[in-house]
Image 1: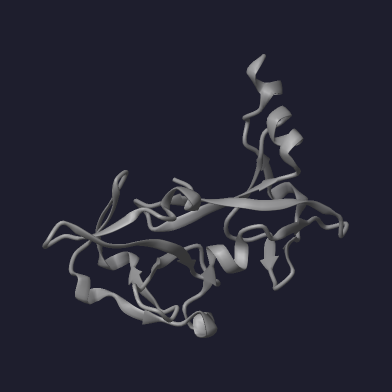
Image 2: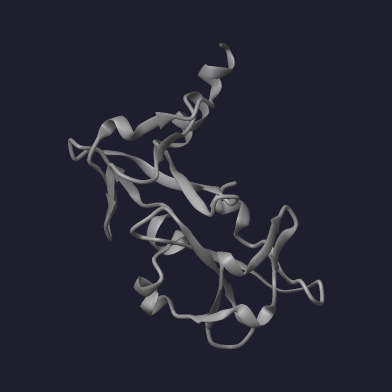
Length: 173
């Protein structure tokens, strides 16, 4: 599943089976490739957020996320998010990808998640819309071989890039 598929999904309280909010963001560990949790906006005038840790979820389905108990949600402050890890929306989405020769080779468009294991497995990046159609997007395996800073995702090893196998050129094979 992709991060973009989880954003805006409803969050249900398992006890009342009612949606109390929608997923705003996915928070990822900076040091490992673990999924930490999912943030949601509180319905008040100020922008305040809560976080539901992955361990506090009962089920992640096509129709939404089911929380064991809505009291498990914790306060979340984006100004202090370094305590939690990386934000999909603020730290990773649309970040440029730079290869070992210091050339811009694309932009991060999504992250592939393995929800059963609680891990993010790869970054999906694009060289542009036309290249997406012709060749398809490419993947960078999560783990070693890159560094994420405030400006870019910097590759240490160009062999970390894997073609995804989608695109018009691959349809003829």
